[in-house]
Image: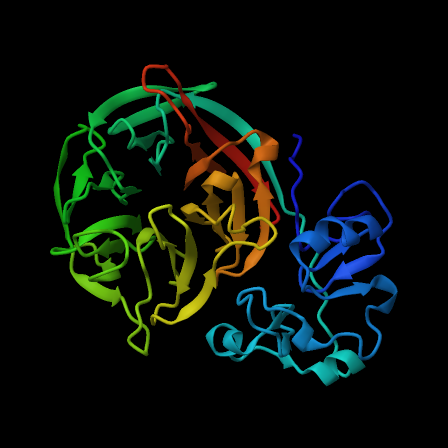
Length: 416
């Protein structure tokens, strides 16, 4: 199988990482952790990263070559770094210390440059993604996916207010049943039925055997659900907000955790300083250790971020996209979010045709260019019964009188 190429920040290739033309490496950007040739250093990289710290590769490792304050923080772009986290292999700023790196092995500038502390080598990542199957779906867009234990799946198309239960056959989907309703989130229960967010305060339940949709016991009244996830231990996590305009954020913006009977167990709304944690919790999921991962939109254009909360409600990490690909012109548009068995988090960046791969605390591992693979406008994510990744796509700039069908991709992955 041929795997598409991507910019992988944690790999050490034999040639320039920007032009990929096999040119001789002469420079390293400490801020980006990129190796590059002379041409790219003075050209492409200089245009997008004027304030980054760049060293000649022959100077790397020499005493007093790296001034921490010259390195901008990956997670807080306006902050200068002050320490090196040897646990996470990255430079960090004061804001990072208490939120993410508390208890980690932290190295000061003098010790770092004089080699008093043995630095842990970065693991060479061998991240790969490849399309194993491609299906044409009888939908305009696949906004949500829920996979059943028998391998069939439910797909939601909000543009046409359709939910379809389908089986996958060769290169297409075969419809088992179809419902007419708009949805804002779906999740499979452990009894193989489907919980649905419809814009009402109470969740709906689709009986997978009969296709009947009824009100169910999960109710966040007076709030309106915005996203849903069912955990491995049968808890239901619901993103919710107060009725009214979505933006600017008013009223309550909260993540609610319920038990199997619909009893509320936990709410995540404010931090210890009574500051709002979330703006619009559009999608939610969680890791095996209980970290709650939220796609949080901040405006009507769905510009957003990924917020990772500890079980106790502390912010473990906030990811706002990568500066190499997410700019004011091409902002981070997170939509689909999925946690893998490894607890890595993957997020679709719809309008940029990207897949961002994060740690279980929301730090970037790498991003992957799906456009290079022919995957356009990736939106929804789900894990198959065999452990592969499903990506449902959108079709943009459509005319309803022109018959179009979107794509569902099945991807094999390794290295994360």
